[in-house]
Image 1 (tube, one colour):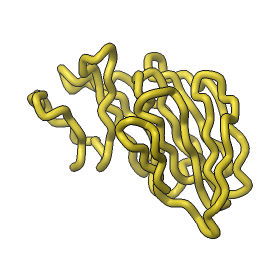
Image 2 (image 1 turned 30 degrees about the horizontal axis):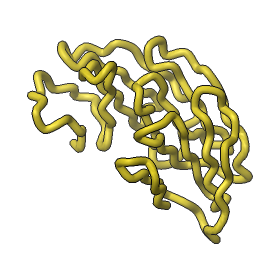
Image 3 (image 1 turned 180 degrees about the vertical axis):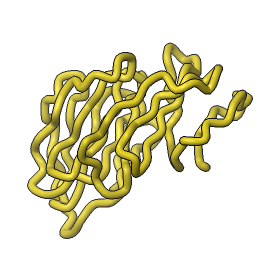
Image 4 (image 1 turned 90 degrees about the horizontal axis):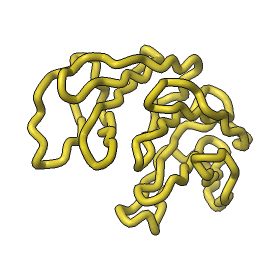
Length: 163
């Protein structure tokens, strides 16, 4: 399991459903929960103190790789679907807040900037779309790949996006 905790945080529980690479959810700088996702098509939101499952978000159409991303302020979670669409949910309620449309092929990977609420998505069309997470507005489109993009990563300062 590859759950990422800050080094100073003791792990008080074991969640049997945690998926590899599940990101840590933070609220006001204090660990409040974990999000995990898997082939069962659900995002599980766990209480980090008790280990209890808070709620599940059903992802009706999950893209290959079960990719998802949590915003730097822990308010949003995004996941690509089996179409050209990326869905965004409110992490406090589990309600879907927007659907981002713009890829010409399957969107398979998403990644939030660590310093501002911009969301990058990419996939089979070889295009990266940067979205303003709060509004769903397209901020920028990056073209240059000739094949599928399977991975996105931001630098810690948010100034570099690798694909």
